[in-house]
Image (cartoon, rainbow, N blue to C red):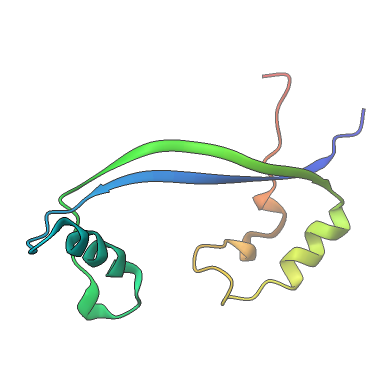
Length: 98
């Protein structure tokens, strides 16, 4: 039987806890929302962080040609964490005999 390629999309969830001094809770909520504004002056450290898990949100079969096209069309602007330079080594191969 010939194995197929699949894309599986997941989302990792973290709970971040911040300690914020403010006049009202709604102001503290607003301040926490500014952390991802892109402005370095808005950044501050969380008190703690907890990993809550990974959830599969989508998946589909792709061809080897589609995979090659994804690699060749990858733009660094898309993601800072893509390992496109690894090429075929990015394909996780299930070893059913292990």
